[in-house]
Length: 458
Image (tube, rainbow, N blue to C red; front, side):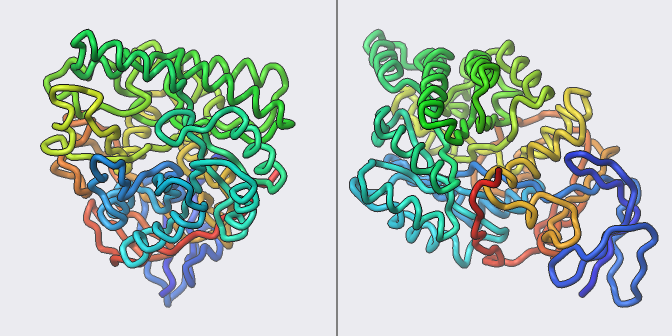
């Protein structure tokens, strides 16, 4: 059925205007004033903002971390996502058994998502080791719709500098992009064991074992390796502190190209003081929460366009169960926190409504830029004729309180309990189908489709 979204105030990454949107066969057909069609269902967006469906390019649905598994699978997690205005995700696949090819996990994750995901989804590859076969497979992964790969500088399958350099060179050759988890593994492991040996095992020592400079050193190192690889594209995931942003700023000042930076709502809104709370285990994530000074620096970087993407690193474990594994020792706690449902409203309420960023910047960092970087644009992240009809209708004048009772995922808490919000999502549409109305999910399990992403453009 045709649909017309009428009377809404449309926001894109660059524009703000009043218009109607005609939708047919899952696509935006035209945008104009006073559109009418007797065969169309009319959705009245008077008094509301209309923006592209948000895209989260950093989630961890159904993630197996060895000691436990994330509690949101591809059904629960994508229901939560779409109720929060996110209509597509690109999920970071977990590590698999040692020595596997890249396609091994791709096959595993397709089975995890098919028949469950309610919104459209893609995947990032995960490089656990580097050899000639893996380098060749990067090309076939891109041909299969996965032109991105993640490299970890810490954890069990961390890559060394030679491995990183080889991946960067190959990904540049095929117009792919490499995402990096940047922390200095040896520094973190040394500090973790030092604190533990001294009996410092409460949650605050998680933050102290992963200092700002352990991240910033790794960010700077990756940027230099990318420079050696002739400005190979680099995407820094979950950048959390001012020193890391300064390293990015310096590389750009020196002329380095193809640097993309992501941060997450938790690094804008929460501080390490959360670890001193009775429920501090809720906030065990890597990198850890930082200081207010770091939050302020990231807001400034976001407003200035130095940070291109706001994703979530959504990786939820129940506070009442999995997180309690770290009750006596923070090193035993699974790392991760929920956030896929809260992101858009937090950034509107704390960012736009408080004057920290513009509405256009919100659309750019939550919708359009991640799609441009990761090969989903212009089908996703845009309000244009020919784009998928993925839309969010947001009431800017509503208000409420963010509380777990309003959440839709499987996890037993939100990190933002009790936060007062400006604005309310009224309706969410994917490919012309209404999936959420007044905070109620009305979509279908398994309706999400795999997104065959394109190589990096320009």
